[in-house]
Structure formats: structure tokens, C-alpha cells
Length: 262
Ligand code: BJW
Image 1: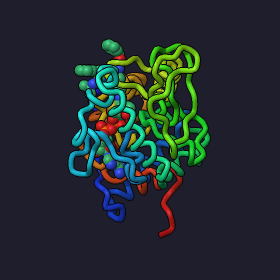
Image 2 (image 1 turned 180 degrees about the vertical axis):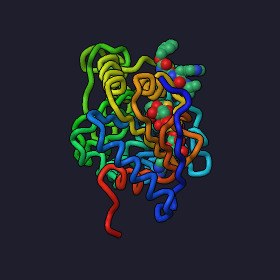
Image 3 (image 1 turned 90 degrees about the horizontal axis):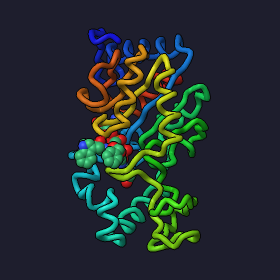
Image 4 (image 1 turned 90 degrees about the vertical axis):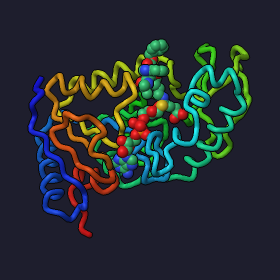
């Protein structure tokens, strides 16, 4: 593991020479890699209109809502209706959203394994096949008692107050709340994808939620090159080889598929 990497930062205004050079360098790194993994967070879906969690200025969810009230088993026990109505609101908003150029560019590369913290299905809607949702999926409900029941829901008509057909416990969104374990099979596959990759493309995550954020350290400890795309220079891993500061839509498109003509 190297702690003294030559990190390059480029701030997008995508027309500047610095940014074009950084995009070219990122493309060179990707093109010379055998195995590429993407690791994404809420910033990947921000340009689709899906709110992030921790961006204060642009309406991050945790600036308006208490995470422990809405995204924890204790919060669900205290007020299940409040929690399910909050998810119903987010589910309907997601139904109306569409993949952005970053989702589509990632999906166009069948050779990339996608590890995402996002609970939305925008990578899949863009056509991506290899997607590992380490924090679960908002388009699924599951048994809160963990009897194994798990079902797809209609984002346009989200269920509220239903019970498990197998064991009568409450159904809840198929996402991972604070204090809950990540789904073991998905987690192990994500660890493998990050441990074995030559390049980890880290997109739109603050990198503060564990154990997911530890996947960046895992990849780096196995000598993967780390490329970060984030609107904030301080987010997404400080030990990146290359940090492109700007919106994922344009930057990820240009890194993964090459610059568009316009
Ligand atoms: C752009 C952009 C653009 C914007 N282009 N970029 C103290 C108390 C309680 C728990 C803990 C604690 N200390 C540690 C813990 C553990 C806890 C944790 O890590 N907490 C920290 C926050 C302190 N972790 C857990 O509880 C996990 N489980 C666990 O540890 O189990 C083991 C265990 C179990 C039991 C006992 C003991 C141990 C579970 C974590 C589950 C996280 N769940 C959520 C909600 C999912 C469901 C839902 O959506 O409702 O997952 S929280 C939320 O954060 C969501 C995300 O996946 C996750 C990560 O956020 P992300 O994606 O990084 O978003 P943001 O908003 O943080 O960042 C967006 C970024 O995008 C920013 O950097 C922007 O700059 C950038 N951006 N626009 C590019 N256009």
C-alpha cells in the first residue's frame, strides 16, 4: 500500500485544460485496467433529481429529516406510519426520475462491476447488469422479522402498513438502516469486487458511512488505482490518485466513454 501517492485534482469547468487532461488521464488508467469496479453514492443520482443525504445547500435528506427517526429500526418501532409515508414519498419521486448520463455511461460498460450504496434502481434502468446494492433496494419490501419474505413493490403505488404473508410481521422497505447488518451475500461480492479490481471509480459519495466506505481502503490496500468524481474536493476518499471535482453526469460520461462531441 502506498500512502504517498501523487494525487491530481482537477476542478470542472469541463472545458479547462486541467480537466481535459485529468479526464484523459482517467481514461488511460481505465483503458489499461483488467478489472474495473465502480463504487457510487447518492451524488451519482443527484442529477436525476434524487436527493443526496448530506449536502446541506442542495436539499440533502438529513438536513430536513432525522436519520435516526426515519432510517433506523428504533424509528420504525416508534412510528411505523411516519417512516412508511416518508418512503412512499421517496418511492413516488423515484418512479418519476430517470437515469442520467453517468448511469448510462456506466451501464454501457459491461466489463465494470458496480458496487453502489444507492437504494434506487437507476443503474438497472440504464441497463446495467452487474449491480451490487450494499444498502439494499427501495423498490423492494421485506419482512421486518427477517423470515425471508422479500418482494418487488410498485414505486408508483407504494404499500403502507402491510404485513408479511409468511409470518404476519410488518413489511418494511428492503433497505439497510443505521445499526443494521448489510446483506451478507451482497457484501461479500462487493468486497471481492473491490479487493480484486485494478481501478476503483468512486462516484458521488461522502465516504462517511461504514462499513461501505471501507471498500475504498480495501481497494487501495490491494494497490488499485483510485479515481474520485465528486462535486466536493474533500469528499470520497482523500488518498485518491486522481480527483475530478464536478458533477458526475458529464465527468463520468467522458471518463468512461470518451468526450461527447458537443
Ligand atoms: C455529487 C453530486 C454530483 C452531490 N456529482 N457528486 C454511531 C451511531 C450509529 C451508527 C454508527 C455510529 N458510528 C458508526 C456507526 C455505523 C453506521 C455509520 O457508518 N454511521 C456513520 C454515519 C457515523 N453504519 C451502520 O449503521 C451500517 N451498519 C453497520 O455498521 O452494521 C454493523 C453493526 C450492526 C449492529 C451493531 C453494530 C454494528 C448501516 C449503514 C446504513 C446506511 N443507510 C443509509 C440509508 C439507506 C436507506 C434509505 O435510503 O433510506 O444509506 S444512510 C445513507 O448514507 C444511505 C447512503 O447509502 C449512505 C451513504 O451516503 P452517500 O451515498 O455517500 O451520500 P451523501 O449524501 O453522504 O454524499 C453525497 C456525495 O455526493 C457528497 O460527497 C456530494 O459532494 C456528492 N455529490 N452531487 C458528483 N452531481
